[in-house]
Amino acid sequence: AQSVTQLDSQVPVFEEAPVELRCNYSSSVSVYLFWYVQYPNQGLQLLLKYLSGSTLVKGINGFEAEFNKSQTSFHLRKPSVHISDTAEYFCAVSHKLSFGGYQKVTFGTGTKLQVIP
Amino acid sequence: DSGVTQTPKHLITATGQRVTLRCSPRSGDLSVYWYQQSLDQGLQFLIQYYNGEERAKGNILERFSAQQFPDLHSELNLSSLELGDSALYFCASSGGQTNTGELFFGEGSRLTVL
Image (cartoon, one colour):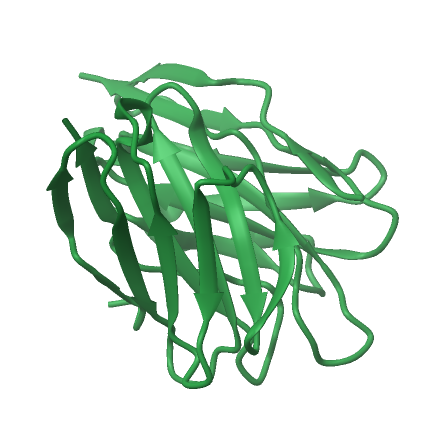
């Protein structure tokens, strides 16, 4: 079984300050990792993903995340946030399949990022 | 545009009624997922279908049911509606040629039960 933990339900941060949103996962098999963003009154959209290769992945809007296998973490970071980054952020994992088929996807409970002017 | 289409976008109904939400996945995607999002419960996984078959079940009430049709569109049926069923219902799809589990979400159907 796989699980995802986002310890911080809300993170307030001042505009232009750096931010880190934490995500830890557990899985008995290799995983793919994702961060999704949900802006107010909208659906979820992909921010970035780790499939393989470099452990530092860059996404849209200046966000990046680092996959740390030993700590089973995939924390999301941005060096300088803007008001427009105010949204809810979800971490998700899916396990790698050895053959084509369906994927089980597990989401964390979400972190609401509030950027303060 | 994610390529996932959900209808209706908004729905207002009364307690005790039944509604059907519809989802058309991205072209080529075989998996459809349904999620419920409310202020107090957050994003809750309801059910997943793969190529017409149920593959995973989450916190789906017995009053709710879903199915995926041969053309891969899916419907979520909510019956005997209660005030607490008011929520945003999302459909997502995945499972194209490179199936990594990346989900493509629709814009959601906002259900209000009065």
